[in-house]
Image (cartoon, rainbow, N blue to C red; front, top):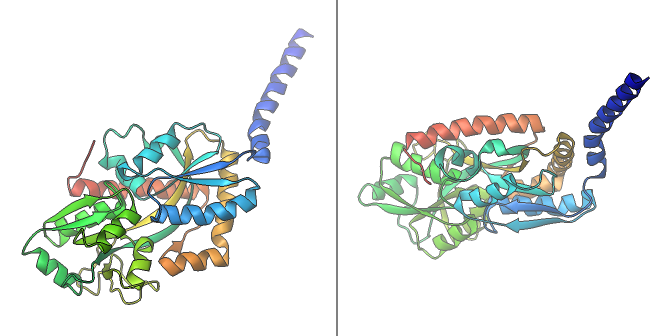
Length: 322
């Protein structure tokens, strides 16, 4: 009799434990959700976070609060989320920089294993843009001038995709001397370029699209094989004589590693539903994004491959930081 009672108790405990994640998913969320953006306002992660946040607030029935915590190429926000409670209420919104920094930054205080991909939602090529007063009318002329003397280029921060992609292109492909100037996000970098405080910026296209279309900056090359409808007058690398050199950035949502599968699935489902909406796609395409739809498993696999790809590029230029 005693053995039967023990067996029933164990069985009941197993059932309760198994039901807990499901129950969590059914009740989640019961409070505000915070999107912790790894970069300053105006950058690509911020643009996507705010667009998704507004729509997700409606779908979840609880406010989604967007908080910008720029710095260290996105590492400050990533570290904060890596140690946050694994309950789905603190979500990192970041870029390719997260994959880059796994190799590039030694003492960042966390590993990508401390995070798990919730959704990877958008991708766009990087663009090189200059102040309208710059004498270079295209990338060929800009590189020719760069062979005569060194120049500065700004990015959204140390270890971001545009930083590594730009450094790789200038150093390994174009063979010119470029001095990197990091900012806390794409917005501040654009502001500096408009003020003519740096010779060029390398940023993911959506951050620069408004300034290019308003004539505040001149796009001289897209790091892609083709032009982009958001900036139809900006030529691709291929057109300017640099084929097979492409780099860009994605935007993704990440939670702390031990966040329950059910919560991640729910967030992924809701975020992907938002990305499938026509107006979402139109808004993102207008600034240069291509929408991506991936399940949690597909997002995790994509991110793993990105870590490897950017690791190879980072090592090629011999870049690392503390």
